[in-house]
Structures are given as structure tokens and as C-alpha cells.
Length: 262
View (cartoon, helix red, strand yellow):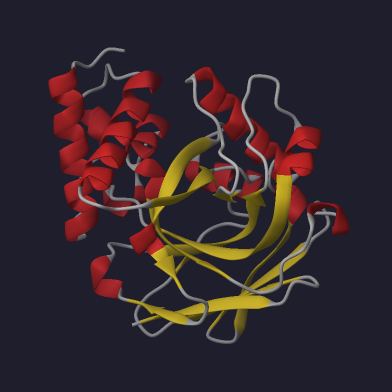
């Protein structure tokens, strides 16, 4: 690590403040170019600690930048990992207040719910599928705190991988009841198709993202707990939204899920 605890605490307070106040900022590596990967996750950990101390519940985990489309869009090549909160949960068909966000975008995701704990190193797709209780459709609403969505990988990790809101719903499926690689998704905005994709866009198989998350946590002495909900990463590019937009995600043989921005 390159940063001291005072700097980590300062950056965590700054980034979380930007989230809660819906204010943007320049990427933090502009001021701290020496920060490393451990520093980035340490800042994210401090944001999580601050939230828990105020009574926020951490209700799930997430993988980000896992699809080839997202990697190309953001100019990166390595997945990142973060967490999602209770206040970020939006009911299927629910409303999302646009003035509490900076520049939100939506992306379709396959959401995993685990029946067994998973811990790396050495976690692989087979272990993930064996430990999965079920999957379901989900929409993640990302909202980078960085001005104009301009960031580098360390900055976005520190910013809890742009986590903001999420919606889950539709029909659940057992992991062995569907080929997630060929699972098709259609994202609509105001009744018009804006994104099409299939599960294989996420690292060849969405379970790969879960395995990488387990290995990442294992290297830190942590694990994916039983019962965890995990957003496996955007299948398509992220779609910008504004007030008045209605978003609907249809997933092959798994129904639909949606939300509205007000």
C-alpha cells in the first residue's frame, strides 16, 4: 500500500459524500497518482465500514466491467468488485429519484443467489454452479461519482465500482436448468430496444465472474457467504437514462423486470 490511513479515510469520506450528495468529482488518482490496487480496495472497505456504522445493511456483492462490451466502453481489461446496499434496492416496477443520482446508466445482469459459501483460491465455474441456489434477472443502475464518467480502474474500485441502485424480479431458475451462456436479454427504454445481448458476453459465462469474485475475496481472507446475492456484471453496454425514462429488461424464459426514473 502507498497511502496512509489518514489519506484512505479522507478519500473514503470524500467519495461517499459525493455519492450521498449526488455531486461529481475528478478521479482521485489525479491527486494521488501513487495509490495502488490495495489502496483502492482499502478506500472501498472504509466506505463500507462507514455505511455499516450508520446502520446501512450490505445486501449483496457485485462484479463490474465483466463484459467485453463494458471493458471496451470503459477502456479497461480487468473486472472489479464491490458491494450493494439496502437503500440501493428498488422493487420491480419501482421509481428511482433522478435528483439523488449524478448521471445514471442502466445495464442488464444475471443475478446469482448462493446456497453455499464460496472461497478462493482455485474457485472455478463448476464450484460456482454447485453452490448457486438460483439465478434471476436484474437491472443495475450505475452512477460513477467521477465527472463525465472519466476514471481509471483504481479510482472506480475506490468508488465502490459505481454502485448506486438495483432492481431484481422476473422468474427464478435453478443454475442447472438454463444455459447461461446463450441466455438472451433485451433492454428497452420507453418501449424501444436499446440493447441486446446474451450471458456469454460476461467473460464467456457469468459464473466466471462469481469465481473471480470468490478468488479475489479468498486472497483477502474473506468469502462469499451462503445466501449472498451477487450481480454478475453488465451483459451489454450501459445505457444512459434521464427523468421520465421507463426501463424494461426481458430475459429469455425468465420474464421481465423494470423501473422508472422520476
